[in-house]
Amino acid sequence: MNTGPVTYLVVEFIGNQFKGEIVPEMQELVDKGLIRLMDFVVVRKNHDGSVDAVEVSEHDENTRKVFAGMSLASHGLLGLGDIQVLAEALENDTAAGIVVFENVWAKAFADSIVRANGRWVLLESVPADVLDSALSDMP
Image 1 (cartoon, rainbow, N blue to C red):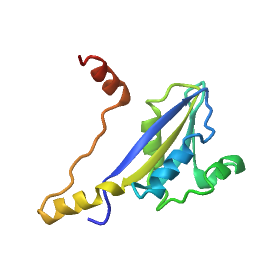
Image 2: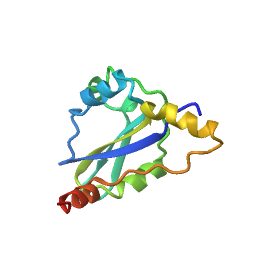
Image 3: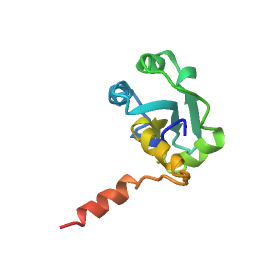
Image 4: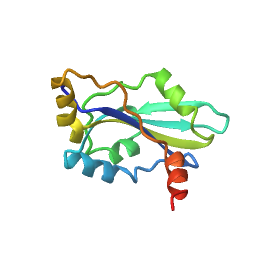
């Protein structure tokens, strides 16, 4: 296997405001070699439910400045149909960052699966609200 597992994350920002506050932490994960950024799209879901999505490289100058130090290993992994489906989970009048990243930290594990004649079939994350609820129910 040439890559570790690839994951996408949708982060919603209330009030249709995305200012890039999460970028330094993402950059730290990249710098430490834990993840490799594959794609990043900024999405705005308007008050009427319509969706605008723009690749960071095609965004306005202020947004490009926020991401100036970050490089993407690829782009265009998220198609318009993918973005529309993911945007359904967003509240109206919000902004979101959709980031696709390789879990570089898991590459050796993924390679061991291939060497064992296995294949990576599915990797999913537990949604934050489900995890919060489950953990709050624990003694």
